[in-house]
Each structure stands twice: as structure tokens, then as C-alpha cells.
Image 1 (cartoon, one colour):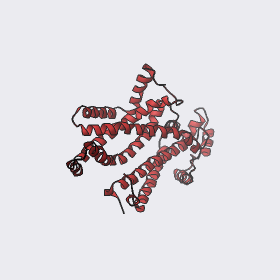
Image 2 (cartoon, helix red, strand yellow; image 1 turned 120 degrees about the vertical axis):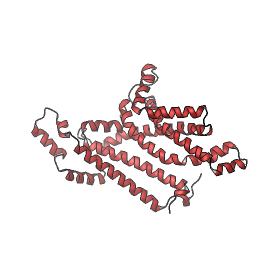
Image 3 (cartoon, helix red, strand yellow; image 1 turned 180 degrees about the horizontal axis):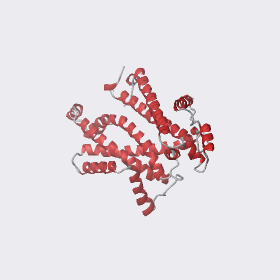
Length: 315
């Protein structure tokens, strides 16, 4: 369905959503900044080593800037962040942006592939479950949804590794050298998201099939396939836009664990390593980038949903 210019949301609506995006990113990153400094642990001691004397550790704190009052650190960090300067890693001795630029393409590719895989499973299966309610495909889909939602992603990833990499030897265990290295991580991420989306597609499709315009189309003698897939499915997929954007955000978060399980050198593994080492600049920079991507996807989804659904279009 083509969207005419008149159907796009108003500028005021877009600006309001964009303002909410900036507020969300600001609140999330500020909370992370505070939590990192409240939790026990001293980055200077970690960098210097357990054998370093107190004078060396104190000198390193001054060099890293962690000896300053928290408010002063926060204001300095906020000013640098507004200038897109995330500082340098305590351990890698490299700019944080440089590290993120190296790692984020793999994480985004993994998340996008898993999201597309989830849609390819959820949409056809959800539609089939709605059209054939209380039949074999419906029971199969519900069983799949319950099982995939009950299994944590990391546990599913370990099961896939044991079955298809260790026992059968179809896929490599670790690394990111070939496309085969990404098959199992994508499946582990996609199945858990598909379990959520398939229930949404099913319920939304059932609701649309019971509406008056569907009954009227059938009464006019339109082919059932056209009624189901030309009209009902198109409207049933509207809620999937918003929920799908949220699920994509979950994929970004889930990739942290999945990258660790499969030893993939992505942003998630970099963040996890930085958290263990209390590498403040890397954690803060990674959280900012992740929050911007997540909020940006939701911003675009809100605009698309408001353009496609006249009920929420704002003037």
C-alpha cells in the first residue's frame, strides 16, 4: 500500500518522538555512568595490577580522572559526549569510537539476520495458526512458542552447539571467519524472538478475520485467498511494526550473551569484557551507541506505524 505525503505524520509528532528519543538516551547513559561509579571496584587498581603499591595506583587514578568528584566527572563526560568524544579505553589504550566502529558491524549484522529470520518464521506460522485454529498447525505453533520462550537464549545456544557443532559437526564451534560461523548464533537469537512474534501475528490475524470489512468482502464473493492475504494480513501486520522494533532491541541485548557463547568479536563481547574490567569509557560508549540504535529503530517504527494507521495519525 503506497503512502501519500498527506498520510505521513505531522512535523510536531515527529519532533515529539525525536525529543523522547534524546531523553531516553540521556537517562539511560546517565544511569549507567552513576551505577559504574557506585558499584565496588577500582579501575586504577585493575589496570595497575594487584602487586602495584598505593602511590602507583593513586597516580593512575589521577591519570584516568577517577579521583575527581563524581559531579565533576559527570559534567566532563557529558560535555565530551555531546561532542561525540567517548574518550579512550583504560585497557586497550585506543579511542572508544574506534573500538566500537570495529565491533558494531558484526553485532548489527547478527541482529538484522536474526530479526529477518524471526519474521520468516513468525509471519507464515502465525497466519497459518490463525487460519487453521484448533488444528494441528495451531497446536504445533503454540507448543513451539511456549518452548522457545521458556528456553533462555544462552541455553538454546549451548544446545545448538552441542547438537550441530560437537555431535554432528555440521557447523564450526567458534569464530567468525565464514558464513557458517553465523548460522547457529542467528538461529539461537531468531527462535526466541519468533516465539514472541508468532503469538502476536496469530492474535492480530484472528482479530482482523472477525471484522466487518472481511465479512463484507466475503459477502461480495471475493476469493478467500485475497480476503485473507490481501486485506486481513496487511492490517494484521500493523502491530508487528511496533512490537518488532522492540524485539530488535532485545536482539541487540541478547547478542551480548550469544557473542560470548560463540566467541564472536562483536560489540556485545567488547562490552562484557569492559564490564568485567571496569573499563568505564568503553562501557559508557557502548551503552550510548546501543541506546541510540535501539531508540532510533523505535523512532522509525513509530513514524511508519502512524503513517500506516489513520487512527493514530496526528495533526
